[in-house]
Length: 232
Image 1: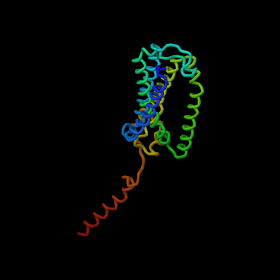
Image 2: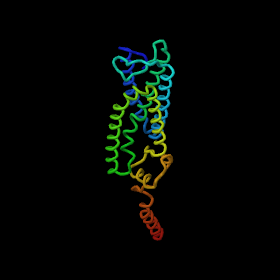
Image 3: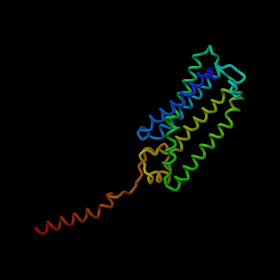
Image 4: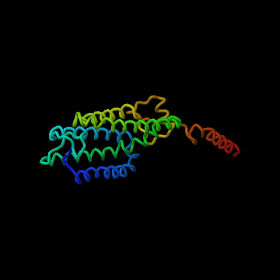
């Protein structure tokens, strides 16, 4: 759709995979620093904006065609004379890949195994989330080509709307798991703490060596001190 053909199209398409790998490797050490919710919401917002930008560029600069290099689902193309528009389109696609690698391409896989408050629920949730991911990928592969063929650039606005819905869903329903143990997450769910307050929520989790457990030892020490003073 950007107007590139042959080897130029192949090279431009290949760069996005390199960017995805680099972005994923870069963000891994920083997930615990930034937290899960901020990364997921930022990624959703960035991807939404970039999808709308791609759709807008294609809406303004693309021209209808009858297939591209044998692919009949591609019905629009940016003419060669609009090189700046083509470069802008490719830049938006690259930025989308980077935004995805920083957030939903990386963070969500660990988050699905962290967010549940029990080991039993965790195993089920990971299975359901993984199955849902691949079922949705199957649906995309099935429905996106006809969508490009029939509504062309408007497809990207649908993608953008989905990304916006993802961000809202995270804000309303995804509790923060950064620095929280399994028992703490269980209390967040049990006490129905709103997701947007979960980052600052401090649950009570009894631990070995707490003040309550050390109280008898403290009383014993005071008794020994009094007895020693009486001897003198």
